[in-house]
Length: 157
Image (cartoon, rainbow, N blue to C red; front, side, top):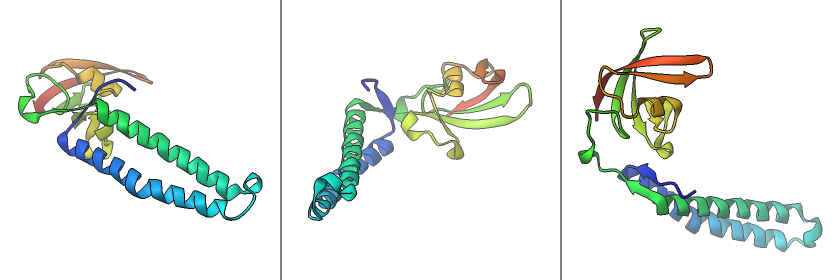
């Protein structure tokens, strides 16, 4: 994963805290679980030992993934965002031209996407379709059931 990921300062701090927690809390706990299972006898027939080793391997993979993401993360400064076009971190109000339904989304990185909070990823089909559009323009987005047309009504921070 060598792609740059764009995040807010808040998300970067959350990522650092999660990595720190994995290293200082979860890693020692995994080591203790392996040691306890090892004390229970023959390792060839010890399912608890195998499970603890597998859990440790999964944890180490998550730690490596977080380290890579932190190494490629770039913080976006909201004060430099141009709201004349839809870009990452802009809030965009769109209208589905077929149904007339109006929606408001904030375009964020994959790490920050949360549909319930109205945050969609810039790499999602809707996000990709909206990037670069100006107010009044229409985005045609390919969906499984065909093309959906969204009119960009408002762009803000």
